[in-house]
Length: 539
Image (tube, rainbow, N blue to C red; front, side, top):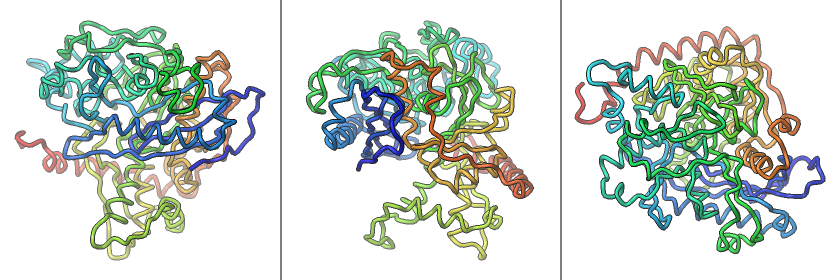
């Protein structure tokens, strides 16, 4: 489907960017003017294959979804297609694709939910005698000093994926010419160039990030993971022009041969560009996963709460990040596994507007969901605790509750988890975060934005076209790469839909609920650790 822009372009510049937003749920393509006005967009879903710790997607499915979504927006209006001057991508991160020398993917990609690398990473991270939260002190010090962070012991980042393949799939490792993140793979298919951006390379945890202007690989970090350096792609800046579209791709899309590919950024970096580029100005992304982010001038790490400032798409700036594993994924789980799961109880009727219905239902339930608490840890958690064994649950469910209360509890549970992240995040920034810009699919919900404002106590700024924040950010990156804009110009282009102020009358209610939420985690964590321990590990 296509969607017309909701506001008029501000400049006479008629050029457009084909902005690609490849997330876990699928691929969105948008035609966006250089000032961020969305002219048209389309979406194609991509299947996620999950089995235990395995969570994979087929790179060819990504490419097919891209071609179909891009084909739809480009076919809608020939006058728009003729104005496209660049293609720029924003993608899910911490995904890993193995490609051979011809650029062909070797099997499915490991996504950011794939935790099979936990044991392989634990072997590399721990010390011989003393460990700090599973890391050898000298190893942890080296990682923190050079990168600003460290590989996750959950095995869910690029480092965990690569060492898993190195240890458990030696044949695939031997055939791998380059390990690519999701963004890098799309850029390879678009331009023929095998490279990584400064931000897509970060979660391999083998780069020296101390100079935000020039991120580079560090030999000692590569040795710590036991990888071959020649399997890592060259590093470029997000605003670099990689070259023209490959002729076959340009022909397939009906674009001019001179259309260029700009390197782009992983999703969190692109969202940050689309939401707020000024130092310390915070944003909240509500998608399948969620995060709090803000650009900062220096590299910094909070080891205890798993918050780090890492290289961003903005040259010379770092992006402070606090990550929540599952946010909107809780709602899609509710939709796909509970409400409309395909079994004997399911009807044949489709429900394309299910999220709008859930929002209307949740709005008529009183704040606090009549005492029902939901913990949104379907895939464990990352901030402020890195605990892959935590699980989701409904607490205090009684005969007095209905599914209406459950709907609201799901929204409040994600908001409570956001407040849990916000406490150490504000300390990390060294200031009150002030008004938070909300973007992503979840930010379209008026009800959810108000709930988050009420629970966190912070005003929430909802942007126009908030679901296209990734695509708009990718467009701005392309515009900077083309020399049409500067990052300093972007604050004036931001279009605000509404600001949600926290309700003072609900402060005590949600303060009490938040304390209960944290107590649930501390009391149930030992039980979850026992229930979800890896097979073969001691009790």
